[in-house]
Length: 524
Image (cartoon, rainbow, N blue to C red):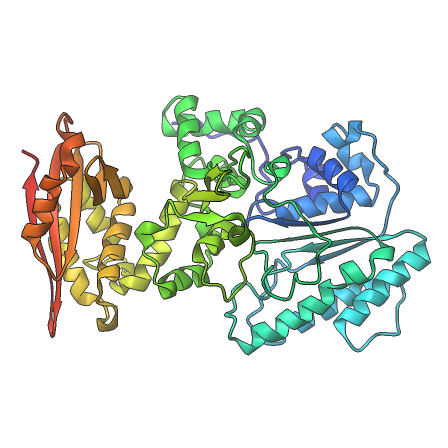
């Protein structure tokens, strides 16, 4: 067990101000090379990244650069480059930390942020619209200072991203934001640099329809590391924290790094980009000296889980989905492309890219995301699993799998199905619940795993046991078991030292009859 000490790395958890991080002595991962590249090569930029990946800190750092705060950048990459450190006026709108549940929330927030700059530049003659006020502000800043303005807009999409497209409030806010952001094009002569950050790129709806001057760097290889941390950066800046976590876990630092990689690494945002870690989760893990799913404690988007269920997509088919580039970059609130939305929100990442077909294969990036995905989706299919001390708590299913009790697991599963609301009794629900429960067991869970004769429905692997499932719906358990043997799904395990359970299951739903039939055999 590690000794209790004071000191070591100072982690800037939740701190999004570049100035505060530098002046407060917090550890800062130097991303300023990318900022230099941006301001030299682009005028208007859009960046999409999941929440908690450092977008706000990035914009804060750009803000400090354009204000000429060179003293904050001493020793950083940008300080040694040929840059113009002349201070420029910066308009920085932050939509990130507000609650948009109230109908007039966006109106109040726009008005408040505009008023702050109107007072600063002594603007008293206001337009009747937010767009008009914004354009007047940009023009007057340029005329009064003799310098073009820099426009930074953080989390532009938060006021609408969780709203449904058929919602009147969505339509109203979309129109407001379209007019507001159109100033990035109509006021071009008064703007030196502009940048929008957000999660989703609403390119198939009207917000982005007029902003064809935006340089979308979200999936460019050159900017794949602009947010998030590479393993090189993690080990370079946080080696003391990794060693301290290893001491707490009573293991070698190399083993701790493997655990961190399994839980928090794996995000790829471009075809040839390096994988990056979730910086928020890594800092929490190093500070707390415990590897846990921290990202989902900060406000997992429940709207996404609801949309997945509403779409009818099978949860066990999401990992390994393929998408075209055009689908991945354009989401829109009303879209049926749940896979693309999962990519932009960080639930899926790029596994590979086929340059001939121009298609991406997507997967869950890491264990933390798998856990969050399953924990948020499962209660929508089986509400009783959310009861902490109930008979269907996830831990009870996990215990059945860990101790090699497939009969206990299947009996509990049958009882769970009887607790599911009647309208959800269908094959897709049964498959989803079984898959999500197994995923949350903390073991390797592989749906539709290919073999030389076909593919099994589900395989769950623990250090001591293998569970091989074949599901049928309104057929027979004999048919399920026979298929496991005839297609030799278990062939790969014949030389395995683990005990292998073959589980044939049939979901019966006829008139008022709903039951789960199953048969379990050990591999012979």
